[in-house]
Length: 262
Image 1 (cartoon, rainbow, N blue to C red):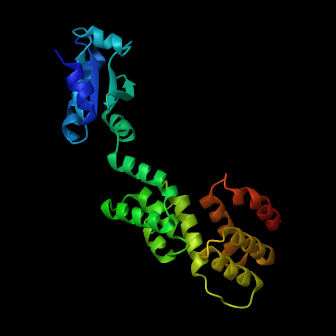
Image 2 (cartoon, helix red, strand yellow; image 1 turned 180 degrees about the vertical axis):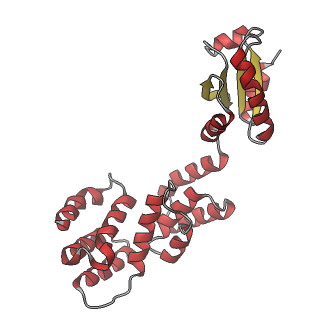
Image 3 (cartoon, rainbow, N blue to C red; image 1 turned 135 degrees about the horizontal axis):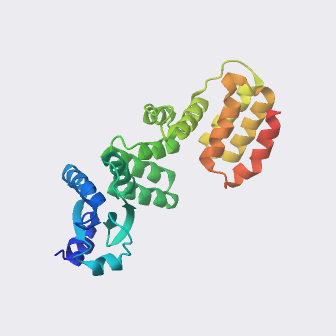
């Protein structure tokens, strides 16, 4: 008999526990069992497997409203965080585990990102640099850092998104970073009015004057919206994306931007 409180509830505060509710008479349960055994061995550093025979421990099955078997529930910090029913194939279960297993590193990043608003820009950059150094290859963290650096340190921002390509979940954000880095590294080529406006936008962004920057970028669109491979248009969109749809400047200047294009 399984000590459910000790082996599942209490243990799940240390490591996630996958509970397989099954019965001897259940054909699909017998199909699923060896698959779970194999996965438990392959991923023993990530989670533990506990099997509950619903015939032997009906009180537990009733407590967790097991209406059909096999039923698999993932416990973390004493509670069910995900579940599935039926004898799924191994590859599908692997995807399910990847999606639902808690990730301490991602949780740490989530908490860090939430705390950035209370930091100065320098503190935010330093905190994210420290996290990225401790977790190399973490694309979400690298992207967050790249966004912070796109204006002040465009070369470093570009390096952080270098390996993010079309099809990657971070691709659109990476393109925004590349566009802003392109804007900030653009050198005056001639006396074109659009270039003058973009130079003024560069200076405004470096000074933290975002409203002046977007005004100058819209002025560059009006002067020559196709300048430097549509950079004024692309830069405005990248800024709107970076600021977010609920940002005051996005709401204020989105319409002016659209009107400037036509």
